Structures are given as structure tokens and as C-alpha cells.
Amino acid sequence: MTLEIQVGEGCNSFEDKDLGRDEHPAVVVQDMADRRRPNTHLIVFANEKGGVGKSTLAFHCALVLAHMGHRVLTLDCDRRQQTLNRLLQARDGTVRTLKADLPSPRHAVIEKPSGAMLLQEIERLGKGCDIVIVDLPGHDSPLARRAIAIADTVVTPINSSPADMDALGWINPVSRRLRQPGPFANVVIGLKEERIARGMKPFDWVVARNRVRNCERRLIASADRDLMTMARHLEFRLIDGLTERLAYRELLTFGLSHLDLKLIPSLGRPRTGHARELRRLVECLQLPAVQPAANFAACSSLHRAPVSARTADSYREALYAAATAGAPVC
Image (cartoon, rainbow, N blue to C red):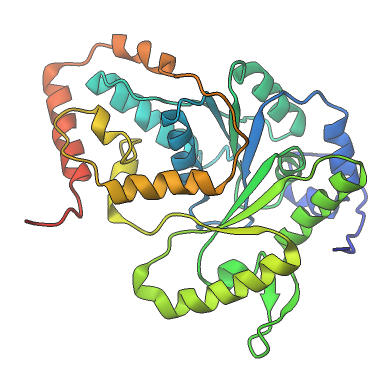
């Protein structure tokens, strides 16, 4: 698909997110092609629309992969919100307080928004890692474009709302045909086509229907039709993300998922449906086969932190309440 993208002038600063919006894909791809890229599978979570669950989806993917034995590094590129990094800091707190052996990814924040800094941190912190997850802010920027340009997999969470889907494409409400790609889709397609033009392997663009509520069946059915139309024209794969569950939100406070409950004594039985949904999400990404290696090293140093028995008991009580939230009453 050929897109007309204007070439801007004077895009010299990576600090101003507005300056990157007229940057031609050729400039972005060339900039990153000139730099050394680490040999690891790079998954970039990207969407210019905020509030679609991008960071929490990246968080759950990182935990599933860690549970599978993969060595995972996560890089949070949102210096202001730091949602992904804070969730993993909460996980470190749970490990430290309960002395629990939980597989955990390495995590850091990209302090300087530039492609060079992104590659530098992947090289510095990603040694021994086979998967790197990058969580981008919910807006366009030179850093976001450069992260997408070097990605192996681009994951775009989307909610079943016409306003949220505008970033991907504009659908005629009468004919249900695609009028034109949205601004974010233009960026992704432009970068993908530039990689192909240079003989580089294109990234796999995956759009994940996220935060689905079962009570919104009519809206979901309409959104699904529009998303499938866009998938055909914009050439992305459409998968299911995570449903909107109280059980997921309650555990986020502690940096946990339902895969972790079986590793923490006295928290009750994990609900298999939730764990199955998490594993299915990663399976749908169709990542290349990589020989995993158990990665519990990140927990060992946290176990040495002194924590009083009273603090640990109070923490465990609060965690038990969160783990059993929404459970059926017998």
C-alpha cells in the first residue's frame, strides 16, 4: 500500500514530540540501520491513542514469557507515567516482602528519548536476554518511530470504540468501507514499506482487541467488522488481547498475574481460565522458537532485604484479598 507522507524540514531535536511528525520513514529507517542492533527479538507496544491498556498488556506479556523461562528485558519509554516500570517495581516489592521465587524480567526507563539511547540500553541491559519488550508513550515521537523501525513484532492494543479505532483507520458509517488509514497506521505502514524497500525483513504488525467487556456484545460485533476490514487493507493481524476483569486489576497493584499465585503459598487456587487467557495472548503473537532458560536470578538479591514478620503478614493479607476478588461464592 503506497502512502503519501510529507517530508518535513528542521527536525533536529528528539526532545520535542511534535517535531517528528513530518519525518519521512526513509530518514527514520536509515538512522536506525546505521546503528548496531542487538541480536534479540524486539516486541514494541505502540499506539498513539492512550488509555487502551498498552502498558498492562506489555506487563502481562512480559510475565508470561518470564514464566515460560525466557530472559526478558522491559524498557519503559514514557518518562512521565512509567506505568510498566512501576508495575514491575511493585513486583519487586512483592518478591522482597514475601521472599517469593517469581520469574521476573529486568526493567528500566529510557530517560533520554532517542533511538541511540534505546539501542544503548538494549545493549547494556539486555545481555543474555532473548526478548526485549518496549512500551512506548501514547503519542507520536521520533523515539516511537525509531522503536517501531527496528521492531520484530509491533503490538497495537485497541479498544472496541470508534474513537479509539480512529488512530488505525476511518470507516464510513454507512458503507462500512475504509475511507483512509488513520495517522498512526500511516506511520506504521510507512516504516514497514521502507524496510521492505531496503530489502529488510518487515516486522509483524499485530492489533490486539483489548479490555473487551462481555456486556458490550453489540458494540464489539460492530467494532470487529470494522477491524477486520482494516486488517485486510492495512495488512495487520488481528488477535484477542485480554478481557476486562476485576481479577487482573486487583493483582496489578502487587505486580502479579494469575500465573504467579501457584508460586505463593496460602493465596488459594489460581483460576485456570485467567491463566489460559494470558498464555493464549502470547501464543497468538507467534514469536519465533527460542530455547528458554530459567530466569530466577532477578529475585535472589531481593530476598536479602530485611522485612519484619508483621509487615509480611499484613502484605499477605492484602494480597489474599486481591487474589480472591471476583471469585465465585460457594
